Image (cartoon, rainbow, N blue to C red):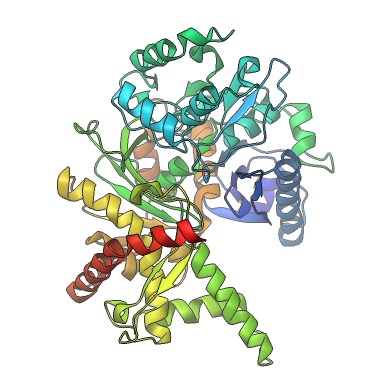
Amino acid sequence: MDAKTLIDEGKSVLGIEFGSTRIKAVLVDLNGNPIASGSHEWENELLDGIWTYSEDAIWNGLSECYSDLKKNVKEQYGVTIKNLGAIGFSAMMHGYLPFDANDTLLVPFRTWRNTITEEAADKLTDALNFNIPQRWSISHLYQAILNGEAHVPSIRHFTTLAGFVHFKLSGRKVLGVGDASGMFPIDSKTGTYDDAMLSTFESMIEDKNFPWKIRDILPEVLSAGESAGSLTAEGAKLLDKDGDLASGIPMCPPEGDAGTGMVATNSVKVETGNISAGTSVFAMIVLKENMKNLHKEIDMVTTPTGDPVAMVHCNNCTSEINAWVRLFDEFGKLMGQDFDRGVLFEKLYGIALSGDKDCGGLVSYNYFSGEPVTGFSKGSPLFFRSAEDSFTLPNFMRMHLYSALAALKVGLDILTVEEKVSVKKMYGHGGFFKTPKAGQTIASAAIGSPVCVMETAGEGGAWGIAVLALYMISKAESQKLDAYLEDVIFAGSTGSELLADQADIDGFNTFMKKYVDGLAVEKAAVEIM
């Protein structure tokens, strides 16, 4: 069936993901091929010291993104979307959205970017003997309890951004297991929250006498392929402000960007891995079983089907690169040149490859916010050099590409060196990999293994959640997700695989020694600035 007929007959499948700087929609056919897309740019704001997005920004962003998709479909195919085969929503993981009995949001959305829960995260990690990062939802809840925040007794439900959007559009308080694993630890054998750890948490807050139990306020956990309800009439109006879209459309479990990244890179099998690099960066490797040792730099999450995943998550990646590119763009305008932003990125990424392998001694820290992997609760972007260093544009750009992955490498080295986890190949996706070769080469140098970028990598998590929605309605009986991806979605797909040469790897390691030694300089910058 051609795309126009598919859309006209309401059989195409939609995925929408709320990223840190962009909300993206991708429409796919029954083989998972993208046939249309739409997007909406948005930015978080710092409100009373908390990184947040307002409720208005969430719902306006959703409708504007869908409106852009709808417009593009009309222009490309001459039809209006009135029905869909299925819908899936995903979003940046973690964070904190607590609601009262009337489903009213009690405090502004606290995003993953906040590093304000150190006390709670440390106490939970010790009590549960399981690494609980600051950005996890349970850390935010427990910190609010420790702070004695007035809203806590009124909580009757809390969730992630994807869970919030799904609830408002379907009426169901559920989460995909991958996203749920960023709220509270998951037992991969049962496919839901770890029962013993839930009991431990209850004992930690028993003296507070809250009118709720943790088991009652967490979302229900669903696995990929299960039904997560359908679009309500109210939800359809939130999504399509023109009122053309029908209600009753099946919805898959809402997922986090980690899970959709795994799907988008065909890395849900055991011993496969992927690296997602955009505003933040994370790398994940699917394990046979949970790690035996506790490492605060390594998170344990799950695939969308509940298999254990070792994850290194860093709060900062490309924001500092973007800031410098904007500066170069301003310089161009000053000189009478109006650069195409995409070409500017391509040129600057590309020239980095001609820089010295060790960046000529230049060092930078891309810490727009705190970076727990290296021990920072707050950050301050910083560039420093000595008078003897080779200060050239190629070295400057190579330094920023290295810096974007440096904190990630600190975490990955713990996983690969200390835990002896084998990384045979990593799949890359996200804005860092859009420029051919550059991002791949740098990532491979950091990891020390081949990095493959699939043709579909640019579609990112929005495409990944569309595929999960498609899987829900079209999988064969008992067909597992990894087999579905292999046999249907990625059948015949080609990608670009690249292994950095030894000089690149050695150069990154030389940079890392100076980077680690210079963390004291970054610490001083944070204290002074």
